[in-house]
Length: 613
Image 1: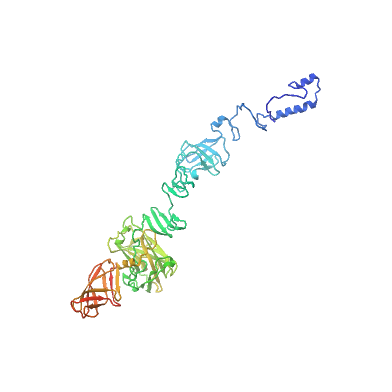
Image 2: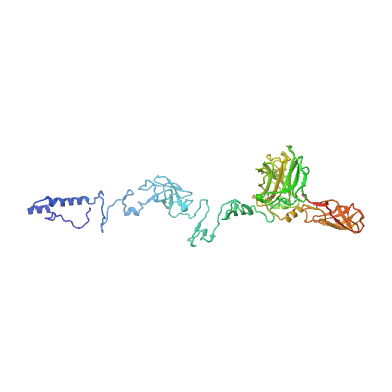
C-alpha cells in the first residue's frame, strides 16, 4: 500500500526511534526475532509498495497531492500518454494537421498517427485548396473516405475554402463535416435547391421553401415536380392515381381523367372549340345510306365525310354504316364505317391506288402553322378492326405542295377492335394552309397501293405517299372487311379522348357539304305557272349554309297548280347560292298560265345538294 502521509515512527515494541538497535544494546536488551522480524518486514513491504518513478508500481487508491503539483512531465508521444498543458493548448493530442493533398483530395498526417479508422474519430485539418466538387479525406495513408455535409450530401464547389479549418467526424463509412462550410446551399441528389420543413405543432424555426404544419402547406419558392405521363399524373387523388394534373414535358401541363389527357396548357396546347378536325368521325351520319361499286371513280362519297379514291386498281368495295366497338371496348361510338371488298385485286402495279379519304378545309387548319419552323404536330387516333392482321397504314396528304406522310400501325388480332394513335410531325418543309374553303389536308386509309404511292414511315416527302412497302393489301380477297370509327385529328403529340358531339351538331357539319331531301311530304316549294307545262319557284333554303354553291340533283316531283290535280314534272336550278336555290319546273302538263304552283316530293322522289370538297 503506498504511503498515505502523516508521521512514521520506527519501534520494536520496547525502544522507539532511529537508534532502535543502539538502544537495545545499551539497555542490554536481548535482541529477539519476535521483536524485530515482523516490524522490519512491514517496513520492507511498505517500501516495495511505494509508487516508483518508472511507474512500474500501480496505485491501488486515490493519489491526493493536495496543493502540490507534478512538474517536468514530458509531452505525450502516443495516444495512451499523459499530455502537458502546453501540448493541449497547441492542439497536439487533438487530431490536427495541415492538408498536403490537392483540391477535392485532402491528405493529412497526424502526429501521433492513428493506425485505423474508427467511428467517432474527430479530425481537424487546415485545407490547402478549395473544393470544386465531391471531395475525400485520407488520414495517415489509411485510405480516402468521402467528405459529406448535411443530409449526407457530397461536398460541393466552394464548400471548403483554401486555408479554412475543417472538422469532420468519421461515421464508420464517411467523414461528416461538422464545421461551418463556406457555402450554405443545400442540394438534393437531383440537384434541385429544395428545402422541406415539417412540424406538426405548427411552429417553424428559420425559413424553408416548403412548409407543412400537418393541415396546410405553404410554398415560398417554386415547387419542382418530375415529368410524368398522362397515365400517371404527378398530382393526383389518392383514390385515383390516373386522374389529376400531369407534367408531361417541359412547358407542358395536362389535365387527366381516367389516364387520358383531356386538356393541355403549354407549348403544344389543345385549341379552344372543337379540337377534332374530322367531321362524322364516329360514323353517326349516313345520308346516302349504303354505297356500292366504290373504287373505280375518285371522290365518290359513301358515309358523310368519307369518300372513295382510286386509280388503276380494279378493286371494288361497298361502304356502309355498321356497328362500332361501343362501351364494351371503352370506345365512344356504337357506329362505324365498314369497307366490304366486293371485287378483289392482287396486282402489284406501281401506279394503282385504292383508299378511303376525308378532306379538310384549309381555313380550319390555320393554327397548325405548317411551312414554318413552328409547325405543330398532329395526332390521329381511331378505333379499327380488320380481317387481316399485320402492318396497316394511315397517312396525311397536303394538297397544297403535294406532300405525303404515311405511318404504320399493327393489327394484332383479326376481326377485333383496337385503339390506334399515331403522331404526324409538323411539316416544316410544306406550305401554310390557305385561309379558304378549299381542301388542304387529306386523311387516307389505304386499301391497295402500288410502289408509286409508297413512302418512308413517319416521314414527309413530295408526292402522294399513302402507304409503305410493309402495308398489307386489304383488297386481295372478297373475304376482307375493314372497319374504323372515333376518328380524331388534333393538335399536339398526345391522343386525347374522342370529342363526342350531339347528333344535331354532327348533322349540321355534314350538311355543310351534302344535304338530301327524300320521301313524301319532306319538301314543299311554291311559285307560279308560266305556261301550261312550266313554272317558276321560290327559294329552297338549305338547313345550314353550305361550303360553296352546291350542285343540285333532282328526281321527278309532284306539281299542283291552282285548279289542276298533281302531275309529274321536272326541276332545274335557276340560281344557286350557299344558303338557298331557286328552281324552274318543266315537262309538266295541264297548268293554267298565271295560276299558283306548289311542288312536293312523293315517295321515292329526292333532291340533293352537294358542295363536297
